[in-house]
Amino acid sequence: MAHPAGTNGRYGDFEGLRERAIALRREGRSLRQIRDELKVFNNDILNQLVKGEPPPEWTKRPNAKDDLREKARELRLQGRTYDQIQVALGCSKSSISLWVRDLPKPERRDPAEQAKLAAQKRWEHELAVREERRQCTKASAAREIGHASDRDLFIAGVALYWSEGTKDKPHARRERVVFVNSDATMIRLFLAWLELLGVERERICYRVMIHESADVTAAEHYWADVVRSDLSSFGKTTLKHHNPKTVRKNTGDGYRGCLVVTVRQSAELYQRIEGWWSGIVAGTAARLR
Image (cartoon, rainbow, N blue to C red):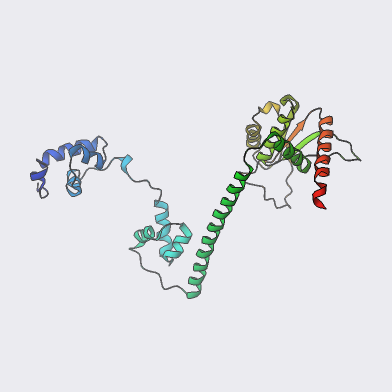
């Protein structure tokens, strides 16, 4: 067998090295591991040593880009340009070039189409900039709040209930505390507020309200996790019948209906909430003059 130039001089017996390299390869070693084991740092010689031996499965590169490569080739065969493929697949132009360089080039695109694509790319960049700015503003505002005191939570809870909770009506006296919401953060804040007020957990019960077409079981478990309670504390779920004439937007995996939080024996608490809200309104009236 013809040995690569220089192997007998620097690396000793080529056949001996090859036997050891093949043995290591069959044990599942990578080229790098074989290189370090045999101290062979010449890539050409290293490849000759393991020639004919397939690499172990674990060393093979992930196939995550295989689908993208095939899609890129399909789009190229349809006459798409690198820019168009990049917009469609979100790949870098360098990767696209490697994947499709053996395919024929498309015809030169229409100037109007080129301008449209350029405008689309500019708009995508602008959206990304706006989103980054939006997230920075939110993060800065969150830092402005800092630690919430008990009084902060008290005021926030009163305002939250008066905007989202059920209210008594002169024509229908229903003085009890019932809070309904689809936002898990509002539910948690409301429960923290009740705890601040000294309302015992035993007085709180829950019920899910959700469209019958949704995943009811998943929603029930979701809300049980939100309130950190067992489903035994939940009442029977209320199912809303679907009207086929209505176009609903609250669908998909993220739709979990609403949670109804009811405080038993809460007439006096409701009266106090109404009084607290009146006090807040009276205390801020002077600012509106």
